[in-house]
Length: 83
Image 1: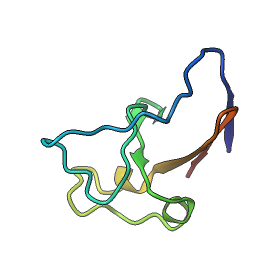
Image 2: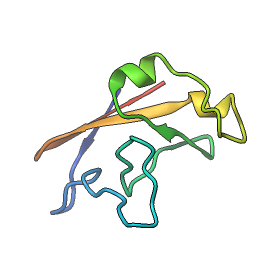
Image 3: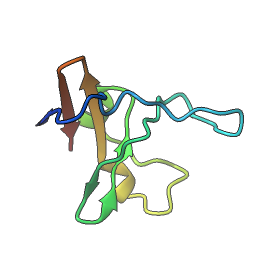
C-alpha cells in the first residue's frame, strides 16, 4: 500500500478519462498512471480485482496485464493498492 500526501491544491487521481471516442470497458480510467520498473500497471475497478488479478484477454503482454492498481481517494488522502 502506498499513501500519498498532497503538495498541490488539486486532488490527484480524481480526474477521469472521458469522451465519446473513449471506451472505458466498465472501468473508471483516471488521467493518472502507475508505473513500476518502467511498466504501466492496469487500473482496476476494485481492490478485489487487484487481489484476484486475471490476465486481460486483449492485452499484448498477458502476464503484465495481471499487474494492477486501484486508488481510494478523498479530500486529504490517496491510498493506492498494487499487486
